[in-house]
Amino acid sequence: MNKEKLTELLKQRSILIPLLCFKNYKNLKLTLEEFVFLMYLKDRGEKFIFDPQSMADDLGMEVIEIMQLVANLSEKKFLTVTAFKNEKNVMEEEVDLKDFYEKYSMLLLEDLTNNMNTVDVNNSSVFEHIEKEFGRTLSPSEFEFIKAWLMNFKEEVILEAVKEAVLNGVSSIRYIDKILYEWDKKGIKNKEDVDHFLYDRKKEIKEPVEVFDYDWFEEDDEEE
Image (cartoon, rainbow, N blue to C red):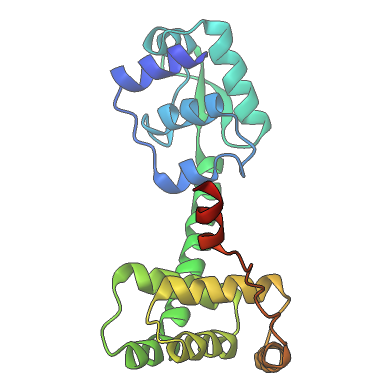
């Protein structure tokens, strides 16, 4: 299935693609073609009769392409195909997506666990501390910034960065973010590291700025 066929397929059919699946299809070792085809199969139900010709007609593909995709998904343990005799004693094949739904359930559990961790982050006292220092309520976007910090920095380092910003007269989340970024580049991981860094910075002797002495009036006299 090339890009053009894939685009046309998505335009013509209402294929429900869960965002969680889409975000993780590469982690599931699926190609984009296999992933879209799997979503197409999912819309048919958990179990259904395997009819490669109707699928090929439906998707604008060749039967051999359908057979290959089913074989790939079976090998990657996303589905199983079982042969059986129907009521008329005719052999048919049934596609079972049980394996896919088990993998999907695992993704949901992982996502739920991540959300539970996020709740712990939200309960941090850092939010309240920053609101107190800023003298206002934080915006939703500022909350997202702080949650990202809490996933990557110790609270004590974040609080020191807030203190540094306030001492400089700046009440800005982006300014604090820049401080944390610079500290991280310098290998600062805890409050002790911050104290050492700030102490060494105070000891630095700034180089005097050399002012170039140029007599502009003398130049004007020469031009005259």
